[in-house]
Length: 220
Image 1 (tube, rainbow, N blue to C red):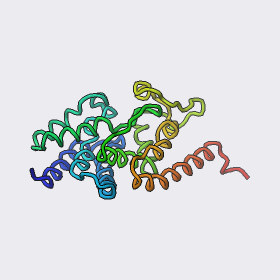
Image 2 (image 1 turned 30 degrees about the horizontal axis):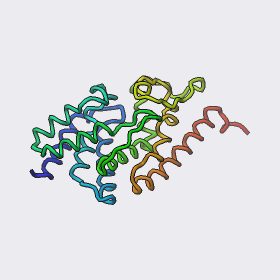
Image 3 (image 1 turned 135 degrees about the vertical axis):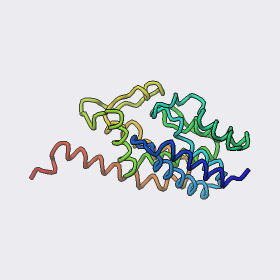
Image 4 (image 1 turned 120 degrees about the horizontal axis):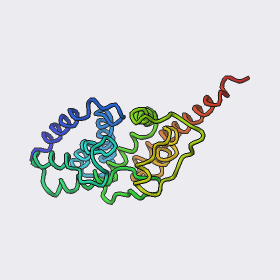
């Protein structure tokens, strides 16, 4: 099994699938998660082949892109891994990570149990916060036809995946329902260190957004 060749071919395969995405789940998102996953995995002593495969393939079956349900078997990823000649034990681990990766609501436990799973989950969540995360949140909100903000619609702390999936609230609410929670959900020391700065940047952005919403910056 030529691991380097498999990773190169997997990257090309995923890029071809996601290159036209405009929801914030495009190839560049995958590339950033891949890069961060490698960095975190090196620091945390994870199996990088498993980490890289899971990072590369984690969105090609994503329910948010109309590709099944988050609880379904990631069939496209499985088919690719099998035809690429990846060993069955590795396929099992990669698919297990993909199935458990996503945030499913503020009160829903999505803790992963393997070091490799924790690394990829952290890398994916890091790309949901900070400056990149802000941009992706509004890209996804626009993609789904959501309002930017509506003070009359309050954020919710979803206690089930079904409730979280059905939520259609404004994009600003998403910060309080998910993005601001991610810092404290990081699994690894490496990711927690990176997340702190990105979290603070989001808080600064929200303060500025709400100030401008009220027109306070034009007073005086």
